[in-house]
Image 1 (tube, helix red, strand yellow):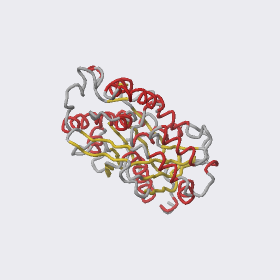
Image 2 (cartoon, one colour; image 1 turned 120 degrees about the horizontal axis):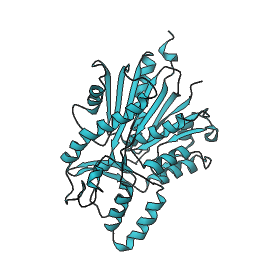
Image 3 (cartoon, helix red, strand yellow; image 1 turned 60 degrees about the vertical axis):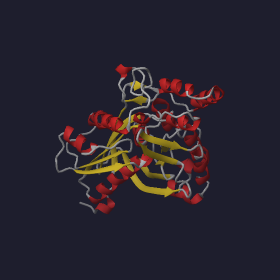
Length: 358
Protein backbone atom coordinates (compact mmCIF):
# COMPACT_ATOMS: atom_id res chain seq x y z
CA UNK A 1 0.00 0.00 0.00
CA UNK A 2 1.20 3.53 -0.75
CA UNK A 3 2.51 5.74 2.03
CA UNK A 4 -0.19 7.46 4.10
CA UNK A 5 1.36 10.76 2.96
CA UNK A 6 -0.25 10.18 -0.44
CA UNK A 7 -3.66 9.04 0.78
CA UNK A 8 -6.53 11.39 -0.01
CA UNK A 9 -9.47 11.28 2.43
CA UNK A 10 -12.99 11.61 1.03
CA UNK A 11 -16.35 12.60 2.43
CA UNK A 12 -18.15 9.59 0.96
CA UNK A 13 -21.69 10.57 1.93
CA UNK A 14 -23.65 12.81 4.31
CA UNK A 15 -26.99 12.22 6.06
CA UNK A 16 -28.93 15.06 7.68
CA UNK A 17 -31.89 15.34 10.05
CA UNK A 18 -34.00 18.01 11.70
CA UNK A 19 -36.85 17.60 14.21
CA UNK A 20 -40.44 17.96 13.04
CA UNK A 21 -41.42 20.97 15.17
CA UNK A 22 -41.14 24.28 13.26
CA UNK A 23 -40.84 27.03 15.89
CA UNK A 24 -39.74 30.00 13.77
CA UNK A 25 -43.07 31.86 13.52
CA UNK A 26 -43.91 31.28 17.19
CA UNK A 27 -40.55 32.71 18.26
CA UNK A 28 -41.02 35.83 16.14
CA UNK A 29 -44.42 36.47 17.71
CA UNK A 30 -43.03 35.96 21.22
CA UNK A 31 -39.95 38.09 20.65
CA UNK A 32 -41.67 41.13 19.15
CA UNK A 33 -44.09 41.30 22.08
CA UNK A 34 -41.13 41.62 24.46
CA UNK A 35 -39.95 44.80 22.76
CA UNK A 36 -41.19 48.37 23.18
CA UNK A 37 -43.78 49.24 20.55
CA UNK A 38 -41.36 51.72 18.98
CA UNK A 39 -38.88 48.89 18.22
CA UNK A 40 -41.31 46.35 16.81
CA UNK A 41 -41.30 47.64 13.22
CA UNK A 42 -37.50 47.47 13.21
CA UNK A 43 -37.64 43.94 14.58
CA UNK A 44 -40.19 42.89 11.96
CA UNK A 45 -38.04 44.36 9.21
CA UNK A 46 -34.90 42.61 10.47
CA UNK A 47 -36.74 39.30 10.96
CA UNK A 48 -37.99 39.43 7.36
CA UNK A 49 -34.53 40.41 6.10
CA UNK A 50 -32.98 37.38 7.86
CA UNK A 51 -34.26 35.20 4.98
CA UNK A 52 -35.14 32.30 7.29
CA UNK A 53 -38.32 30.41 6.57
CA UNK A 54 -38.13 27.59 9.11
CA UNK A 55 -36.27 26.61 12.26
CA UNK A 56 -36.83 23.21 13.82
CA UNK A 57 -36.82 22.25 17.50
CA UNK A 58 -36.65 19.05 19.56
CA UNK A 59 -39.03 20.64 22.06
CA UNK A 60 -42.24 18.56 22.04
CA UNK A 61 -44.94 19.43 19.53
CA UNK A 62 -47.74 18.05 21.70
CA UNK A 63 -47.18 20.93 24.12
CA UNK A 64 -47.73 23.43 21.32
CA UNK A 65 -45.40 26.37 20.91
CA UNK A 66 -42.38 26.24 23.28
CA UNK A 67 -43.26 29.80 24.32
CA UNK A 68 -47.00 29.07 24.57
CA UNK A 69 -49.06 28.56 27.71
CA UNK A 70 -48.12 24.86 28.01
CA UNK A 71 -44.72 24.93 26.30
CA UNK A 72 -41.25 24.31 27.71
CA UNK A 73 -40.74 28.05 28.26
CA UNK A 74 -44.24 28.75 29.59
CA UNK A 75 -43.22 29.46 33.18
CA UNK A 76 -41.19 32.38 34.45
CA UNK A 77 -38.40 32.02 35.18
CA UNK A 78 -37.63 29.64 32.33
CA UNK A 79 -36.27 26.15 33.10
CA UNK A 80 -32.74 26.08 34.47
CA UNK A 81 -29.65 24.58 32.94
CA UNK A 82 -30.22 21.20 34.63
CA UNK A 83 -33.63 20.77 32.95
CA UNK A 84 -32.22 21.83 29.60
CA UNK A 85 -29.30 19.42 29.89
CA UNK A 86 -31.65 16.60 30.81
CA UNK A 87 -33.50 17.20 27.55
CA UNK A 88 -30.20 17.42 25.66
CA UNK A 89 -29.05 14.05 27.02
CA UNK A 90 -32.14 12.40 25.53
CA UNK A 91 -32.79 14.41 22.38
CA UNK A 92 -29.27 14.99 21.05
CA UNK A 93 -28.42 11.29 20.58
CA UNK A 94 -31.88 10.64 19.10
CA UNK A 95 -31.49 13.38 16.49
CA UNK A 96 -27.93 12.30 15.74
CA UNK A 97 -29.11 8.72 15.19
CA UNK A 98 -31.73 9.97 12.72
CA UNK A 99 -28.98 11.61 10.67
CA UNK A 100 -26.84 8.46 10.93
CA UNK A 101 -29.71 6.32 9.63
CA UNK A 102 -29.94 8.57 6.58
CA UNK A 103 -26.22 8.15 6.11
CA UNK A 104 -26.63 4.38 6.46
CA UNK A 105 -29.02 4.47 3.49
CA UNK A 106 -26.02 5.53 1.38
CA UNK A 107 -22.95 3.79 2.87
CA UNK A 108 -22.26 1.07 5.45
CA UNK A 109 -21.45 2.36 8.93
CA UNK A 110 -21.13 -0.85 10.97
CA UNK A 111 -17.48 -1.14 9.99
CA UNK A 112 -16.58 2.33 11.31
CA UNK A 113 -13.21 2.33 13.06
CA UNK A 114 -13.44 5.86 14.49
CA UNK A 115 -16.23 8.11 15.72
CA UNK A 116 -15.84 11.91 15.84
CA UNK A 117 -18.72 13.89 17.38
CA UNK A 118 -19.04 17.68 17.54
CA UNK A 119 -21.59 19.53 19.68
CA UNK A 120 -21.60 22.79 21.63
CA UNK A 121 -25.19 23.03 22.89
CA UNK A 122 -25.03 20.52 25.73
CA UNK A 123 -23.03 18.31 28.03
CA UNK A 124 -23.62 14.78 29.30
CA UNK A 125 -21.29 12.06 30.61
CA UNK A 126 -20.95 9.36 29.41
CA UNK A 127 -20.82 11.52 26.31
CA UNK A 128 -23.16 11.40 23.35
CA UNK A 129 -20.30 9.73 21.46
CA UNK A 130 -20.60 6.74 23.79
CA UNK A 131 -24.39 6.84 23.69
CA UNK A 132 -24.35 6.84 19.88
CA UNK A 133 -21.80 4.01 19.70
CA UNK A 134 -23.85 1.91 22.11
CA UNK A 135 -27.15 2.55 20.30
CA UNK A 136 -25.55 1.58 16.99
CA UNK A 137 -23.88 -1.51 18.50
CA UNK A 138 -20.55 -0.31 17.15
CA UNK A 139 -17.44 -2.09 18.32
CA UNK A 140 -16.53 -1.20 21.92
CA UNK A 141 -12.99 -0.78 20.58
CA UNK A 142 -14.01 2.08 18.28
CA UNK A 143 -11.79 5.14 18.79
CA UNK A 144 -13.92 8.09 19.87
CA UNK A 145 -13.25 11.84 19.80
CA UNK A 146 -15.67 14.43 21.21
CA UNK A 147 -15.28 18.02 20.00
CA UNK A 148 -17.14 20.36 22.33
CA UNK A 149 -17.98 24.03 22.55
CA UNK A 150 -16.16 25.17 19.39
CA UNK A 151 -19.38 26.54 17.92
CA UNK A 152 -20.24 26.94 14.26
CA UNK A 153 -16.87 25.93 12.78
CA UNK A 154 -16.71 22.67 14.75
CA UNK A 155 -17.77 20.78 11.60
CA UNK A 156 -14.48 21.85 10.06
CA UNK A 157 -12.60 20.65 13.14
CA UNK A 158 -14.44 17.32 13.02
CA UNK A 159 -13.80 16.73 9.31
CA UNK A 160 -10.21 17.91 9.69
CA UNK A 161 -9.75 15.38 12.49
CA UNK A 162 -11.18 12.67 10.25
CA UNK A 163 -8.80 13.72 7.48
CA UNK A 164 -5.80 13.38 9.78
CA UNK A 165 -6.98 9.94 10.91
CA UNK A 166 -7.39 8.63 7.37
CA UNK A 167 -4.06 10.07 6.25
CA UNK A 168 -2.35 8.27 9.13
CA UNK A 169 -4.38 5.04 8.73
CA UNK A 170 -5.64 4.50 5.16
CA UNK A 171 -7.87 1.62 6.31
CA UNK A 172 -9.78 3.87 8.72
CA UNK A 173 -13.48 4.56 8.25
CA UNK A 174 -14.41 7.61 10.29
CA UNK A 175 -18.02 8.33 11.25
CA UNK A 176 -18.33 12.10 11.77
CA UNK A 177 -21.40 13.45 13.57
CA UNK A 178 -22.47 17.01 14.34
CA UNK A 179 -25.56 17.63 16.47
CA UNK A 180 -26.84 20.88 17.95
CA UNK A 181 -29.95 21.73 19.97
CA UNK A 182 -29.82 25.51 20.00
CA UNK A 183 -33.50 25.91 20.88
CA UNK A 184 -32.82 24.57 24.37
CA UNK A 185 -31.23 27.90 25.21
CA UNK A 186 -33.96 30.54 24.82
CA UNK A 187 -33.25 33.53 27.07
CA UNK A 188 -35.94 35.82 28.52
CA UNK A 189 -34.36 39.07 27.33
CA UNK A 190 -35.98 42.32 26.26
CA UNK A 191 -33.26 43.81 24.02
CA UNK A 192 -33.46 43.71 20.24
CA UNK A 193 -29.89 42.53 19.50
CA UNK A 194 -29.99 39.28 21.53
CA UNK A 195 -33.52 38.55 20.30
CA UNK A 196 -32.34 38.92 16.71
CA UNK A 197 -29.39 36.64 17.49
CA UNK A 198 -31.70 33.96 18.92
CA UNK A 199 -33.93 34.31 15.84
CA UNK A 200 -31.12 32.76 13.77
CA UNK A 201 -30.74 29.42 15.55
CA UNK A 202 -32.42 26.04 15.15
CA UNK A 203 -31.75 22.35 15.85
CA UNK A 204 -30.18 19.87 13.46
CA UNK A 205 -27.80 16.95 13.07
CA UNK A 206 -25.63 15.56 10.30
CA UNK A 207 -23.47 12.48 9.84
CA UNK A 208 -20.72 11.78 7.31
CA UNK A 209 -18.47 8.87 6.46
CA UNK A 210 -14.85 9.82 5.76
CA UNK A 211 -12.48 7.24 4.30
CA UNK A 212 -9.84 6.67 1.62
CA UNK A 213 -12.48 5.21 -0.72
CA UNK A 214 -12.55 7.30 -3.90
CA UNK A 215 -16.14 8.36 -3.61
CA UNK A 216 -17.65 11.75 -2.84
CA UNK A 217 -15.67 14.92 -2.05
CA UNK A 218 -11.90 14.82 -1.60
CA UNK A 219 -10.85 16.74 1.54
CA UNK A 220 -7.91 18.99 0.70
CA UNK A 221 -5.68 21.29 2.71
CA UNK A 222 -7.33 22.83 5.79
CA UNK A 223 -6.80 26.42 6.94
CA UNK A 224 -7.57 28.39 10.11
CA UNK A 225 -7.18 31.91 11.43
CA UNK A 226 -8.37 34.01 14.36
CA UNK A 227 -9.15 37.69 13.82
CA UNK A 228 -7.37 40.06 16.17
CA UNK A 229 -9.33 41.80 18.94
CA UNK A 230 -12.54 39.99 18.08
CA UNK A 231 -12.90 37.49 20.93
CA UNK A 232 -15.96 39.22 22.44
CA UNK A 233 -18.00 39.28 19.24
CA UNK A 234 -19.34 35.69 19.34
CA UNK A 235 -19.76 34.03 22.74
CA UNK A 236 -21.63 31.29 24.57
CA UNK A 237 -21.95 32.18 28.27
CA UNK A 238 -23.03 29.31 30.52
CA UNK A 239 -25.62 30.57 33.00
CA UNK A 240 -28.03 29.05 35.49
CA UNK A 241 -30.69 29.43 32.78
CA UNK A 242 -28.95 27.67 29.91
CA UNK A 243 -26.32 28.95 27.49
CA UNK A 244 -26.65 32.63 26.59
CA UNK A 245 -25.60 33.39 23.01
CA UNK A 246 -23.96 36.73 22.25
CA UNK A 247 -23.70 37.49 18.54
CA UNK A 248 -22.55 41.03 17.86
CA UNK A 249 -23.89 43.02 14.96
CA UNK A 250 -20.26 43.86 14.19
CA UNK A 251 -19.52 40.31 12.98
CA UNK A 252 -20.41 40.75 9.26
CA UNK A 253 -18.36 43.94 9.05
CA UNK A 254 -15.35 42.30 10.69
CA UNK A 255 -15.58 39.37 8.28
CA UNK A 256 -15.81 41.71 5.29
CA UNK A 257 -12.78 43.64 6.54
CA UNK A 258 -10.80 40.42 7.07
CA UNK A 259 -11.57 39.29 3.53
CA UNK A 260 -9.86 42.44 2.25
CA UNK A 261 -6.58 40.88 3.39
CA UNK A 262 -5.02 39.08 0.39
CA UNK A 263 -3.04 36.78 2.71
CA UNK A 264 -6.24 35.41 4.24
CA UNK A 265 -7.94 35.15 0.85
CA UNK A 266 -4.96 33.19 -0.49
CA UNK A 267 -5.20 30.82 2.48
CA UNK A 268 -8.92 30.29 1.86
CA UNK A 269 -8.60 29.78 -1.89
CA UNK A 270 -5.18 28.05 -1.88
CA UNK A 271 -3.90 30.86 -4.05
CA UNK A 272 -6.62 30.47 -6.69
CA UNK A 273 -8.82 33.26 -7.97
CA UNK A 274 -11.98 33.10 -5.84
CA UNK A 275 -14.17 33.31 -8.93
CA UNK A 276 -12.55 30.12 -10.31
CA UNK A 277 -13.97 28.12 -7.39
CA UNK A 278 -17.27 26.59 -8.43
CA UNK A 279 -18.22 24.86 -5.17
CA UNK A 280 -18.64 27.18 -2.19
CA UNK A 281 -19.82 25.59 1.06
CA UNK A 282 -20.03 28.53 3.47
CA UNK A 283 -21.53 28.15 6.92
CA UNK A 284 -24.99 29.75 6.80
CA UNK A 285 -24.50 31.81 9.94
CA UNK A 286 -26.95 34.44 8.78
CA UNK A 287 -27.85 36.40 5.67
CA UNK A 288 -25.54 39.29 6.56
CA UNK A 289 -22.59 36.91 7.02
CA UNK A 290 -23.22 35.28 3.64
CA UNK A 291 -23.52 38.72 2.06
CA UNK A 292 -20.19 39.72 3.65
CA UNK A 293 -18.47 36.64 2.18
CA UNK A 294 -20.05 37.13 -1.23
CA UNK A 295 -19.05 40.79 -1.43
CA UNK A 296 -15.69 40.37 0.30
CA UNK A 297 -14.58 37.70 -2.21
CA UNK A 298 -16.36 39.33 -5.19
CA UNK A 299 -18.34 36.16 -5.87
CA UNK A 300 -21.14 35.73 -8.37
CA UNK A 301 -24.62 36.32 -7.01
CA UNK A 302 -25.44 32.60 -7.16
CA UNK A 303 -22.16 31.32 -5.67
CA UNK A 304 -23.64 30.83 -2.21
CA UNK A 305 -27.01 29.45 -3.30
CA UNK A 306 -26.47 26.19 -1.37
CA UNK A 307 -25.74 28.09 1.84
CA UNK A 308 -28.69 30.42 1.39
CA UNK A 309 -31.03 27.47 0.75
CA UNK A 310 -29.93 25.83 4.01
CA UNK A 311 -30.50 29.11 5.85
CA UNK A 312 -34.03 29.43 4.45
CA UNK A 313 -34.96 25.84 5.31
CA UNK A 314 -33.29 25.48 8.71
CA UNK A 315 -31.72 28.66 10.04
CA UNK A 316 -28.31 28.43 11.70
CA UNK A 317 -27.81 25.02 13.32
CA UNK A 318 -24.33 25.86 14.61
CA UNK A 319 -21.84 23.08 13.77
CA UNK A 320 -24.38 21.02 11.80
CA UNK A 321 -25.04 23.82 9.29
CA UNK A 322 -21.89 23.44 7.20
CA UNK A 323 -22.56 19.71 6.90
CA UNK A 324 -26.01 20.47 5.47
CA UNK A 325 -24.40 22.77 2.89
CA UNK A 326 -21.79 20.13 2.01
CA UNK A 327 -24.60 17.59 1.58
CA UNK A 328 -26.14 19.85 -1.07
CA UNK A 329 -22.78 20.27 -2.80
CA UNK A 330 -22.19 16.51 -2.65
CA UNK A 331 -25.50 15.91 -4.42
CA UNK A 332 -24.22 17.88 -7.41
CA UNK A 333 -21.89 16.41 -10.02
CA UNK A 334 -20.52 19.62 -11.53
CA UNK A 335 -18.10 20.79 -8.82
CA UNK A 336 -14.44 20.83 -9.89
CA UNK A 337 -12.88 22.94 -7.16
CA UNK A 338 -14.50 23.74 -3.82
CA UNK A 339 -13.93 25.57 -0.54
CA UNK A 340 -15.65 24.98 2.80
CA UNK A 341 -15.61 27.98 5.15
CA UNK A 342 -17.11 28.62 8.58
CA UNK A 343 -16.91 31.33 11.23
CA UNK A 344 -17.38 31.05 14.98
CA UNK A 345 -16.26 32.12 18.44
CA UNK A 346 -12.89 33.78 18.50
CA UNK A 347 -13.77 35.41 16.02
CA UNK A 348 -12.19 32.59 14.02
CA UNK A 349 -12.46 31.33 10.45
CA UNK A 350 -11.75 27.71 9.55
CA UNK A 351 -12.17 25.65 6.42
CA UNK A 352 -10.66 23.37 3.83
CA UNK A 353 -10.40 22.85 0.11
CA UNK A 354 -12.36 20.04 -1.51
CA UNK A 355 -12.82 18.51 -4.92
CA UNK A 356 -14.49 15.66 -6.79
CA UNK A 357 -13.44 12.03 -6.41
CA UNK A 358 -12.39 11.70 -10.05
